[in-house]
Amino acid sequence: MSADLKALRGSAAIAGVATFGCGEAPGFTDMELLARSAHAAVTDAGLKMSDIDGLCTASGGATMWAMPVAEYLGIRPRYIDSTMIGGSSFIAHLLPAMQALRSGQCKAVLVCYGSAQRTASFGRKEVVASRKFLDPQPYETPYEPMLPPSAYALAASRHMHEFGTTRRQLAEVAVAARAWAGLNPEAFMRDPLSIDDVLNARMISDPLSVRDCCLVTDGGGAYVLVSAERAKDLPRKPVYVLGNATAVWHRQISSMHDLTVTSATESGREAFAMAGLSAKDMDMAQLYDAFTINTLLFLEDLGFCKKGEAGAFVENGAIGPGGRLAVNTNGGGLSCVHPGMYGIFALIEAVRQLRGDAGERQLKNPNTAVAHGNGGTLSSQSTAVLGTADTL
Amino acid sequence: MTETSTPTGAQAHHQSVLDQGRFLIQHCPDCQKHVYFPRELCPHCGAAPLNWVAPTGHGTVYAVTTVRRKAEAGGDFNVCLVDLDEGVRLMSRVDNLAPQAVRIGQRVKARVQVNEGRGLVVFDAEKGDAA
Ligand SMILES: [Zn+2]
Image (cartoon, rainbow over all chains, first blue to last red; front, top):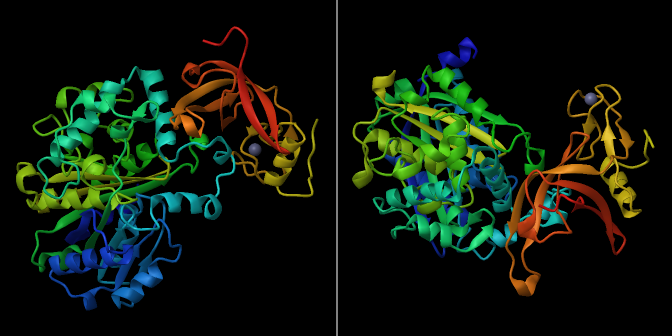
């Protein structure tokens, strides 16, 4: 950890957040969901669109996405980042944006995302089909894995083999997410869910059933990052970025060295080092739960428990409401929202909790959070450590 | 069998050899590690070019899933990751067992299946290891 990176600790704050159209938003395009979220986040920050001079965005489809976004929003950013590493992108956008703010390159960075993949006519099925040509994986495609679920299923099979993790323990993750979703009016699936419901659900790619898999929804999300000094003069309680790091070790699941150890071990270690904190200091964990195995892997790799012990860690509702660790308090990608890429929503939920804006699911006076993003098939990992003013 | 220079990229060469029914992987002349999937330089040490070598074909199932598919579309099938004894991993399937019978740790042997002129590496569980 370099001194320069440590000096960035707490130098920037999230001043505004918003979501729009989470669940189903028929009649909206990706861009429209993004724009409504962006405008609401900028307004939440007490700013105007004309104050935005930094832009970070990425798309699961359009390869030059930052350009139409700038055009649509009518902004001319002095700082732009459209790094696309899947669902972790919007957490990975933090650190370069902090550096841009610190250097004076820009003064207010808008990070934004929108996807209508549930209701759009060109939806998930078509995106998956087109990726075979635009983003080929010639050494996996001939075997017809159902991607991404089969990649995560392979990781789950290995975790079960090495550590005795059970399908019931995986189901605990889905059940906890649903219990939190029940407290969140924005969550798409809120009906009670039992362990048996998960175990008896239709199998997708063994050992994962449909209830081990994230939702396919519409939704947009955005946040605004400004310098810590500026954040003090804005209306909302600032949420400071204490640490952020990103790690990518592979693309294809067949290239992952050890299917039970993700590069979250590296992104987590670096982000916590920058923050000067560790997992035990966290009041909550917002983890990219595209599949139930993700939550187990990230609890281990970020240091909430030892490798192989996450199955036992989550038993008996331990990560649900009232449990030992609050995880995915919005209901996560499993039960709240998952429009293609979920990362920005994990971060937004952490901010809402740290500001005390989380309504019925609000934790009691939290000061710290880890928001963790994942992209591809366990391929990219980005960890953010966030805190209130008390943590500075 | 060792070939160093090929007139095409690694991907096309690998496939054209497969289409002839042969399975080749790569070997690094500098760090002596095997490489798969095929590429133009060694991902371990950066050296190039890599040599093409025939693996023994023996391997062990590292991870396994049964992809569920409707019966009318062909039914459930196996997808697995196999570690070859040479130390490389590839996605494939075990072809001579029911999908649910494929087990992590099972010993398997590679076979090139050529369909309509296109070769694909699949595996069979070795005799006595059809767990
Ligand atoms: Zn080498």
